[in-house]
Amino acid sequence: MPRSLPLSFRHLATSLGVLAVSSGMAFAGPALEDGIAAYQQGKFEQSASIFQPLAQNGDATAQYLLSCQMINGAGLAANQQAGWEMLDQAAQGGHPDAEILQARRLEATQGSMHDIKVLYEDAARQGNAQALMWLGLDHLQNDRMDDAREQFENAWAAGDPRAGTMIATRFAKNRQEREDWLRKAAQHGETHAAAYLAKDYEKSDDKAQAMGWCAIASGLPGHEANVDWKEIGNAIAKNCARLDADMTPDARADNRDKVDQFLKSFFAEYQPWHPWRPCVIQP
Image 1 (cartoon, one colour):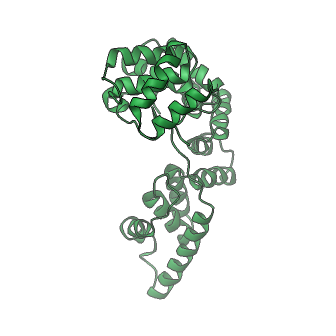
Image 2 (cartoon, one colour):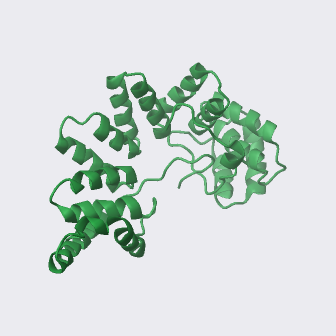
Image 3 (cartoon, one colour):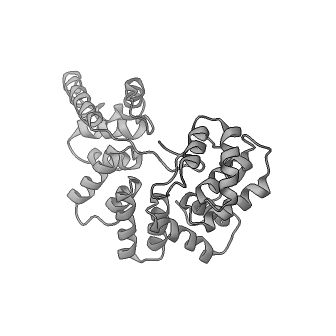
């Protein structure tokens, strides 16, 4: 994630789906829970009617979700200006997702780096993995290596496997530590980690692992738990077959059996992560 992230906020705002309040945000009570339930079910008129009085009373979660509806025109008339003003209130109230959206908006409009950092820092204090990743990258770009690793480890603990890839490629002291971090990150759906492992094993004599990691890197089924074996097979045929092209037919057949065993073992332990998305509340 670059420090200055160009965003289309019209596109960003239309990513309404099934939403997820960041962990650590306390609910105001049954009314807010009812509004969130309606929001998750796409009953936006109902959720807006519940969120409006709560937002007026300063509830940051209601302000955040209502701002998403106002920007999108979901359940009430679209009002971009009022929606962003409402989002700003949620950010001022300490809602981490609102803080990240405001920080990104400031990045896209060349806003104050101090203000951007303050927003990310506050979201990070609440354990938001997206904010922790941003801080880690900021420290890295400014050669504060110890601070960078600390934030990446915090981001990993908060559930972002991209942090494992950063630790592996920037801080690992030896090959084993690098591989351990990359394997853990890949096991949670981090395709960049699998790509690094594919490259590493391509230099070794273990063609089964080289092909397996290549297939995972290019055919991993997103962040869903269901394995699309056809997609994996297509990835092997298109991107990875070159890795055992020099083998005899019998040796290649044996290698492909090893690849199948490797992939079955990998997906038996596969635990995909759910990337942060604006205006989305994960169940």
